[in-house]
Every structure is written in structure tokens, then in C-alpha cells.
Image (cartoon, rainbow, N blue to C red; front, side, top):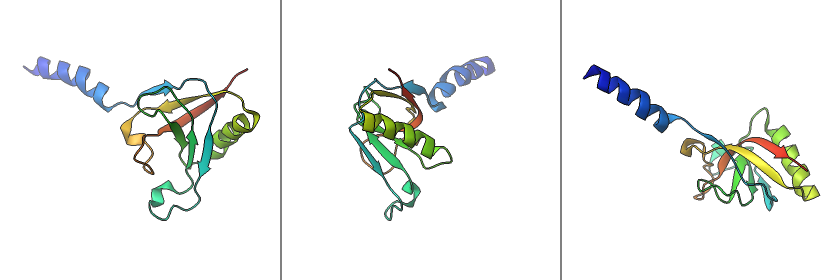
Length: 117
């Protein structure tokens, strides 16, 4: 019985609790929206929403940059792609715990920006 419980724990729980890192389709950014101070939901302060058809069922309309020490780097690459009309691909977490809290639509948290010619 203990072996059965251990086996179930090893195979079932890790798949339920781990966020997966996935890659969006390559496409054009359709909009970029940034917040300074979000009066209604303070945890959104400094976040940036990027709209784009991602091809992901978890967050089909776009991604967001969580305000952090690295947010400026991610945003500058996204802005460069947007202004240059350069296609871009994002690496994101598809975990529901990391969906953006500022909308009823799901936006996945951005992990990396990939620009390619």
C-alpha cells in the first residue's frame, strides 16, 4: 500500500503543480499597454500587457511583463519589435497562478522575447 501511494505521489502531483514553459507562435505585436500605479489592483503596478495572437489556448490574446528588475529589458525588446513591425516570439509560463490578474481574459507571464529575421 505504501508503494502504491508513493508511486501515485511521484507521478500525479508533480504534473499538477509544475508550471510549464511554452513558446508562442511567431507574429506581430498588435498593442502594448503599461501601468504605472493601478489604483484598483495594486499588485499590477508597473505591469505591461502585450497583445498578439499567441496560438496558445491558455492565453490566446497576449502576454504580460510582470514589473521586476528585468522588465525594462523585456519591454525594450518588445517595443523594438513593435516599432519595426518585426515578428516576435515569446516564451511564457502557462500556469494559471501566473496569469495576469488585471483582466478576466488570460494573459501568460512573459519569460523571454525572441526576435529573429
